[in-house]
Amino acid sequence: MTDTPTLPAVSREWHLVSRPVGWPKPEDFAFVEAEVPQPGEGQVLVRNKYLSVDPYMRGRMSSAKSYVAPFELGKAMQGGAVGEVVASNAEGLAVGDHVLHFFGWREYAVVAAKNAVKVDADAAPLSAYLGVLGMTGLTAYAGLLRTAAFKEGDVVFVSGAAGAVGGQVGQIAKLKGASRVIGSAGSDEKVKLLKEEYGFDAAFNYKDGPVAEQLRAAAPDGIDVYFDNVGGDHLEAAIGSLNQGGRIAVCGMISVYNNTEPAPGPKNLARLIQTRGRIEGFLVGDHYDLQPQFVQEVAPWVASGELKYRETVVEGIENNLEAFLGVLRGDNTGKMIVKL
Image (cartoon, rainbow, N blue to C red; front, side, top):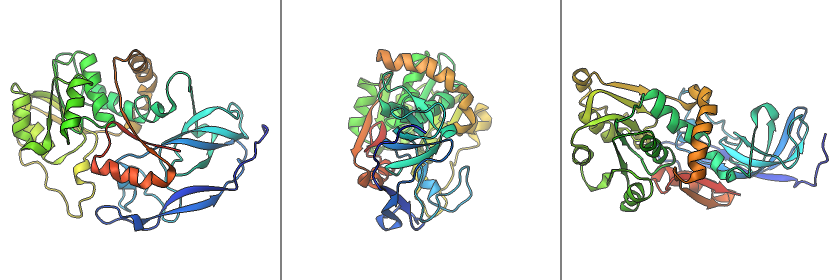
């Protein structure tokens, strides 16, 4: 075992104490202190530096069966995190190394070396491994190129386009030869970002009027690909504007995550018959085989500035819950990050 520096006796962490009904409330959570353990055989102790909060975490707060196990009540929640190894009992990982892992919502985490991915702090800012070069970026890449089968010349519509995934989808589409990229967002400031910084050809504030009308105005000749982060009226609008052979990749439906009653589905699904359209949901976990290709292609775009990204950074683990709620409200531009 490598030399172990003096470590604090306790680590602060967030627990789920009751399952939210509708919008999560502060009383559904507890901010507690826990003992900092020493790493066992094949493990490392990591001092987290950056934590990720993401919309999918809302699903893990309910007990409903899903693609990932619910958070356990009375135990630390989980999420993406990047940190520094401060004690190691594993081959291949030394004190001072930086790693990406999945034990966020806490200051210190004991992680099996097999579940920790070493990252290069000199190649990119550490926070980028939670977003543009991490799971968020791979979600955009896989959903657009594999699930939606994007091809050069396509007209692409992205909802939630100022978010961490959506902003990357639109830019990758442009870099790969889309004829037109349209995005929706929830504020005029975000619309400006999409057009002036991310290079979208058109963007609109979905709060300004019916989405279907605004999409038709932005894409008068229809769309070939819709990348769905929102669901609801956005999905119905996209089906209404879908060209023949159009493809819809369903990544998320943040508009319905806090509903207590089932949300009505699109009323125009029959149009898929006319257009021979396809809707397919996907999970990034099914596409990790694309990770090497993704990094090889996207990292140079990030380094050159061709692919831009934004982060909304909240300081302090005590504000982790508020940062998460902010994602559900749409407060973030780009990836929401908690800096410890």
